[in-house]
Image (cartoon, rainbow, N blue to C red; front, side, top):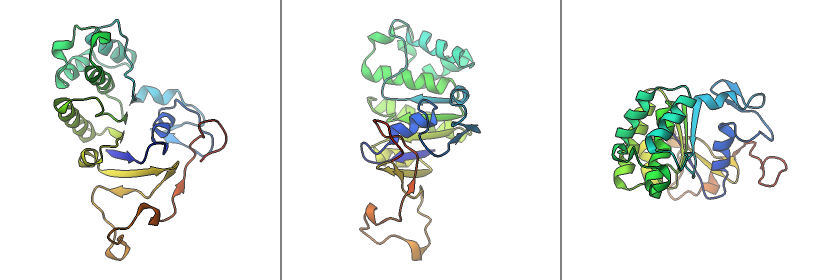
Length: 220
C-alpha cells in the first residue's frame, strides 16, 4: 500500500487519472500492470479501479443494483458484491436508491463498487472523505485485507496520520515532481539521515515526471 502525499495542486489527482488511463501522457513513459499507457490506455482499465471525489453510480438504481451492475461490467462475481455490502455496513441500505443516500453513504457505495470488482490495482483519491468514524474503520480493514491478498493500493490523502498507519511506503508530490520515496520505517543509514527540523526544500533534487499542465503544454 502506497500513500501519495503532497499539497493541494501538486498533481496527485492528475497522476491517479494518468495511471487509470483516463488522461494521455504528455511526455515520458508509463507502464501499469504491464500495459504501456503511451500505446494503449484502455485495456488496463479492466484491471484497476479508481475512486475519485464523485462516486460512479446511478441515482435511480439501488445500492445493490449499482454494485451488481458494475461487478458484472467488470467480469466479477455477484457474490463479491453482496459480501462487500456487508463488510462496508451497507446491507440495510441495499434496497435504497443511490440518489436518496447521504453523502457519506454514497461514498461508501462508491468504495464498495471498487472493492467488489477485486481489481489488481486500487487508486483511491481521499477515500476517507465524507465517512463517519465507523465507515473509516471498516474501510481501513478492507484496505489492509486487499493489500494482504496481493492487490496494490495507491491512495491520496491529506489525513496523513491515518494514511501513514496503513501505508507501507510514502511518495510525496510537490509541484508536479516526485520527492524521494520513503518506506513506512525510515531506513536511511545514520550518516544520511536528515537532521532534526530539516525542511522539504532541503531534500535532494526531485525526479521530474510527465504530468500535463492544466491548460496544455509540456510536463511540469
